Length: 198
Length: 198
Image (cartoon, rainbow over all chains, first blue to last red; front, side, top):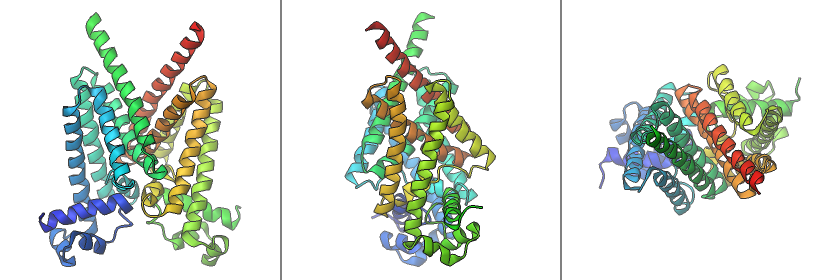
């Protein structure tokens, strides 16, 4: 069994996915984590804000690892794009459209109301963009162009979660993945052409 | 001066942009609207849920009209894409990253917690996708392909708001717009080639 701190983090992530930051009460967290209420303040003396910051950071790291695993397993960068988007769509379908990004809802809720948490979400998004951009650059895409493409990939995943959850349909996520795969493949074809002809 | 009902709707939209659905108290709404608290229940007997549904619908319609105006004014469909994304980025910068989509935050908050509001957001997203898809189809893009492209455009706008607000930077929104313009232009070039050669 996970330790109390880890159970609190996992439960908070689950509640943030389902109902966001403002919609989550600390008593729900400790009930779901099967932890005494006081243990929350023992592990997170700063209360809800400190807990949220820890969840944002740990979820951000977990998603980054997931992305890297999918990329490593994919036959090529284009397949990695659809593997990731189709995987996210499948998880949405299997979980009744609950299990989406644990950071997205919170990011929008706090962007203009809590600067500490806003910065935590910004750092996570930046780390995802950076990871995807490095991968693209390793295939020969120019650095600035890699960052642009990686930014659109992350934005489209987040928007895909929003549209698919609202419609209770995997199609927005899948359609976004298909088109972005084309965009990545056409970019890599350009790189190959340039490499071949020079 | 706007009537009380309209002032309540406008104020609620403003508060939803800044702090979302769960973060907005009805007393804040009537204070911002300069309306007596009782007038809220007079105009929206169903309280917060009914008010939110009305705001989602009216904001959805307002954004659709804005999109159509931008498209009508643009020299071509590709320019319309960057005009819209760059316009959204400029408004974000001018308003301290507050004035974004009034529906996005609410859509994520209610997706798994309030089915009436979830459906209202789904209908708005569907109407935006439909509007953009019809425009693309009118330029010769195949219907199914138009829907895919329009879906990605809407998803990327919503994700762009999220990333730009978190980073307090217009760049995620602008970068997404640049790449999607390329995607739309390459699609239209394909359509023209097919039309010319057949």
